Image (cartoon, rainbow, N blue to C red):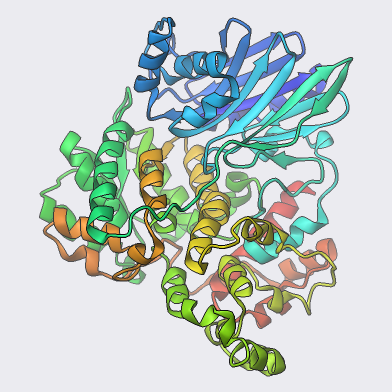
Length: 600
């Protein structure tokens, strides 16, 4: 993995140099093995590298080929097949790194190359002849990329803090409400008015013409679409099983040893069992929170079943949690309410301390294969979302909305919602709008992000729409944000192997009825049963959060007074209105205050 920082157009040398000094530690964490700079006409950039493929002479960045200069952060699973295609077209290669494949692919295919890449990446591309800058991200946004531009200059970087503050503009007040509602800031927005995130599966171009920067509209090169080609469970299971086998081989490719995060759940167990076929001694790491957690029992049981010896159980102590809490704003660089950031940071630190710089993970499996309880809940409610039930369900729900909202649980409230209202409600992990609208005085509606996605899905059944929402919203902005920040803070490349294009494409070809034919995560559980002589597939799903009953201690009245004075938001009133997941609410408000204190 790598760190990217650059300036395009009119070069702001003084600002760049001063800022580079201030973010040296962050750059080094994302790329501790090598740092290089390039200074070309209208283009100045720095790249820090974590060497996974090749060596210090092979894969050096910034990389140039003819009129193209790139800064690449990521990993291509299909670099070898692309290399063969390019060799047949007359290109020669000097090494084994994917960087050389990327730069020559872009030279030959231009922006069409992004469609060919199977892997995770963010790329900055400077075309010396066209005087253009292209910023691109992988399909699902596994790797971040940010930018800020004015009339004459563009700054870009891997994380928000890589952009000089003076170019980011004022705080974006609407982002306060985005965060309160979702627990994260959805792209393209950030906490600043003139700082933007490149959208997943998209690229944006800038041209320097007559000493002015001209920005194009963001262009999407990939959009998830459910084809419903496969409507048979056996065929679906075979297709996914084959895709997993092929993806694991590609995912294990590295010039250094690879470790595996192992919770004992279905996803990580499948990864470990397949990885063992290629390396029986692969290092498996489990996080254990003690009596509140069952990861130790789950993982030890399966490890014994597989006769796997190389297994580390990281016992997470209170001081580990305290250390992570104190670092949370540095790790995230944005407010973030997912408590699993705490164990994720600790586990990736354990990976690094154990001598590894690559770790396989199971992230993305729940979104692709309907693993969350929200999928199961929606499956039960789906038939009642037909408009023929409106007079019996929706109309009474509107008439009695106030007593229902005041006295009922979240789940009962959802029964009275329309299809769109329910899909949006299931996608908001923060404070529901009904929980904050009486506390926060604003005409701004953060639900526009979700409405925009749903408006593109007309004609699909509710479960299909919800699968798309998970892939375009929750997965990139919550799960993959967490994985990138926690892993990169510890100089580790995380590889979420279920997000190989082979597996994504296989999943999107399967109907929702088959996906949930025997409950949540039907297909992965069937594969588990067929390949592992162990009962772990039948155990209930558990979250990967910070297991404690002390959340309320991390958000004090003093914190709340600061939040009110700074933003006008009364966090304690929000918590009183919250129906469930109070732990996440306390942690989110703690993260919000910590970020504000570090950035104001």
